[in-house]
Amino acid sequence: MALSPEIEAQILRYYHAERWRIGTIATQLHVHRDSVARVLAQAGLPALGPVRRPSAIDPYLPFILDTLTQFPRLRASRVYDMVKGRGYPGRPDHFRHLIARHRPRPKAEAYLRLRTLPGEQMQVDWGHFGHLEIGRARRPLMAFVAVLSWSRQIFLRFYLGAYMENFLRGHVGALTAWGGCPRVALYDNLKSAVLERQGSVIRFHPTLLALAGHYRFEPRPVAVARGNEKGRVERAVRFIRDAFFAGRRFTDVDDLNAQADAWVSGPAGERRCPEDEALTVHEAFEQERTRLLTLPGNAFPTDEVKAVCAGKTPYVRFDLNDYSIPHTCVARTLSVAASLDQVRILDGQTVVATHRRSYDRRQQIEVPEHIATLVAHKHQAAAHRGTDHLVQAVPTSRELLTQAVERGEPLGRTVRALTELLEAYGVAELTAAIADALGRGVPHPNAVRLALEKRRQAKAEPPPLAVPLPEHVKRRDVPVRPHKLDDYDQLMGGSPDDE
Image 1 (cartoon, rainbow, N blue to C red):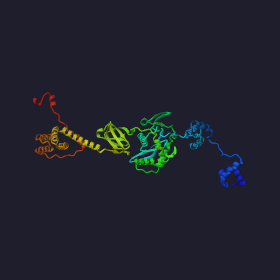
Image 2: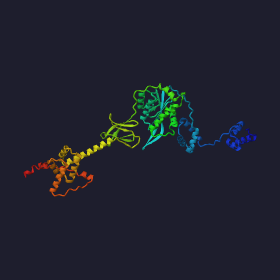
Image 3: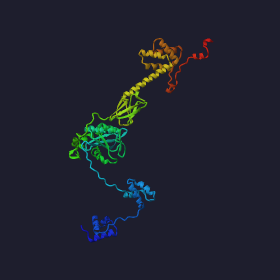
Image 4: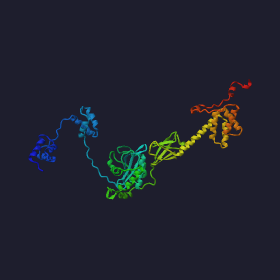
């Protein structure tokens, strides 16, 4: 719709005389803003820009622009400190907006489309998918993702943590699932692959080099901060996050991995292959499979091996939990070899214990035989301590115990019976009673008890009363063996018979 000359004159006057903005003119005159702009453009008059008022930053702009030219990524807070030290009076919040206007923008970078041959390359990366609560433990859920660069075939496996052992297990699982190995493996600069990097000089992780040597592939890291160089696996992680993991329910990691295998062989394999859209990913992979290197006859070992110290208790600590060991292995250094579902404890080359692996924390995983053997050993040690105590107090009891065992009497019960008689009658009376029982050829606690009762009745003494004493008092009541006095007679220069 054409505007009348009166409206066009008003637009020109409001814009150049009153300095209204185009949006304000369009609103007040009830016309479209494009019509206002067309009238102003046809008038041939110079467009009026925004009125720029003097700013407190103006005297410092040459210094700021020079600094940002030398250091384009310097933070605004650091530039503010530098300018404030030179007398800038403004506040830091407004200064950030001003710096954003003057910071040099990086030039747009063009990228080449990377092409690979079948069987030439795979790309590997980790993806973080939150945490899982297992009992009292909170463990990260990490996805190992490997992608064949030509066919886009995905291998997906979830683990509880991005440990080096899980990194190795992911490689072995991927190559086993594919039935072959590509010639190059592409990584970013994660610690499981690159330990140190100075320019083009790279120090690889020695375990990764051992894995690469076993399967005959070349590990190759991308340049620093160049994730686009392994864009196939980056997109695969994003594809897994959106098309597989979002909204998915699972009971545990094994269930999640089973669902992942079904998804990889199903929907993920039925999508179109970018290298040849006439093929699906699964069909392209069947062609690429024949170009992969043959796998060696044995798989690379992936068990986590760790030295542990066993203390006084029959347990070793591994991965937040305690695992039982035989009591004969305490107070020494042992080795733990752990797979995803089993923990083996070794003393040298000998396996001394095998347990299921727990991903909880502060749990005691025990073999019942380990604890039962220790308890039996402790009971036997207690019996030995009782025998030593009895023989030390009454030396003649050794012969009675020997004869009682030869006759088939239980040693522990005999020792306990004689110990009770010792506490009730004392050392002298028990010594005499044991001598009487041995003299009659009856090495039995009942014979000793009968002899003690006869001696008590002959002396017309009352029966002894058992006085219960605390354990710490009993430990103080240590019998003392009487010393012979012959040594003192020799010191006196003679014997009592000389007087």
